[in-house]
Length: 356
Image 1 (tube, rainbow, N blue to C red):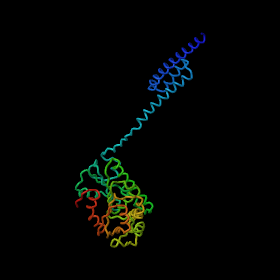
Image 2 (cartoon, helix red, strand yellow; image 1 turned 120 degrees about the vertical axis):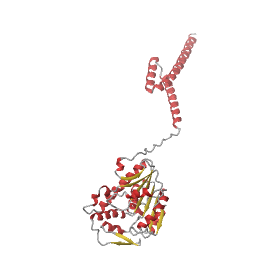
Image 3 (cartoon, rainbow, N blue to C red; image 1 turned 90 degrees about the vertical axis):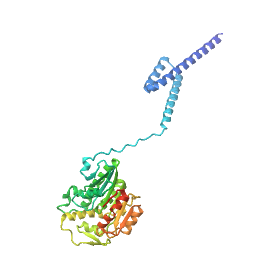
Image 4 (spheres, rainbow, N blue to C red; image 1 turned 180 degrees about the vertical axis):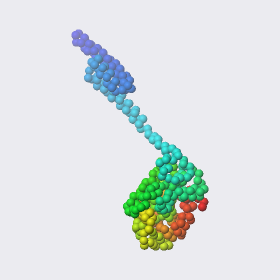
């Protein structure tokens, strides 16, 4: 009898504790859900308080831990399922095209709409201490489809400060340094327009052809959208640039044979300007441009009887062809080639119509 009563008491106690445990677990689960919203620290505090007040056994604590773990894993699983959705990256809009900054205006001469979507940067022949603005004026008069076009000429080191080539003879190294200052100015202007989302074209002829080539070689083919070079050289004859480095003038007979004057120019400024030419002419652009796989952005125009720089050699032409550059050639001399092909070059390269 006593054993029966004892067994009954044990069973009753077991059933009572079981339902208490179920009740506590259910309560705790609801608290977990609510507490998850308000934060983990609050969850920890309430659970510890419940454990302390109810004197729950270690087994009960393990049950609560399992519930927390299941709930936590469920939340993570739901969050991860949302993370699986592809993230749409919004492209940063280009800088708004506005009127030119004063900083850029100090480096250029321009005509046209300051807010134009297309910019034509011209690099004239020379070099000269005088800032060439006439090339911009002449082109603007000749361009028939000038709407939405800004035509620009950029200062060079010796046009910003002509005293650097006056007074005393400069070294070839100094000439190279001045040329790099000019390249930096040119690149700054081109980058300014590119960062605004504008289309940038670069047109260089004679000395400007060498400046254009140096821009591409040092700053990359993507410094502009397209390039037009008229009457330049990739690898001018060594004897010519070496003579220029000494302040001597040179030319080509029938575009092929170099002819060098025996004496340096008597004017120190002219000698130093010749050294600026030598500072770029000394470069072998078939080597410097060779790492660039594709030069299809470039159109190169040359004359076979160019007396100032000479005709492109077969090796120079082959190099341009191997890099997918467009080539236009004629029988003319330095000036004649310019006037013969400026219309075709502008139209085919930039889509700009010129009527001379």
